[in-house]
Length: 202
Picture 1 (cartoon, rainbow, N blue to C red):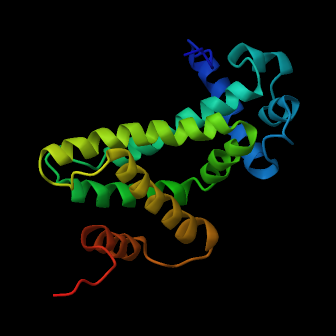
Picture 2: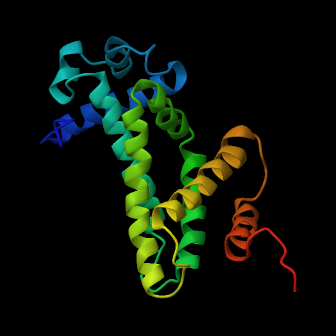
Picture 3: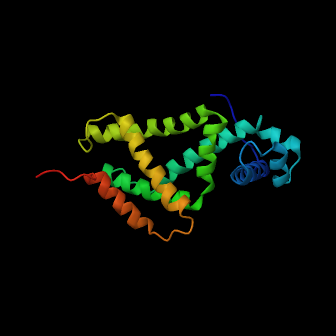
């Protein structure tokens, strides 16, 4: 993989990198990728234009860095509350709750991730495919332990990711002033995941 960022070796350098990233997030969220220039980012960061190029080759690499960071942060937020001995069903519950809480605190993430589809489709595909590949490993382990049905792990991973993504859109993004308790939303979703939504003939 090509290097997309020059990681600073000093605290001062890290502070500058953090400022660039925070400014980019703000502007990409407010104006979008194409309408944000490197000059806009450096002006927002209050740094010289040339300083940007110490860390990033171009705006595209900065955007890729953001996507990688979001993927890492989301996985970290999910993993922090999950114990190794938890059942797969419990892991799904904890993961969904953690994802919704993360998105609630970082609403700009949705905009930046989904805009990647219109910047470079491969960025969008890679983001979700990489997430699904990691998800599939956990699903395969649960299948081996007899906790989950023996179905295609990729289909199952995208199915579960789709639930999280669109529940997040509805209860965090679409309803900006929504007072719906996340715990109640998680509870309802877990009933659907565990039992399904269709009644069966007895």
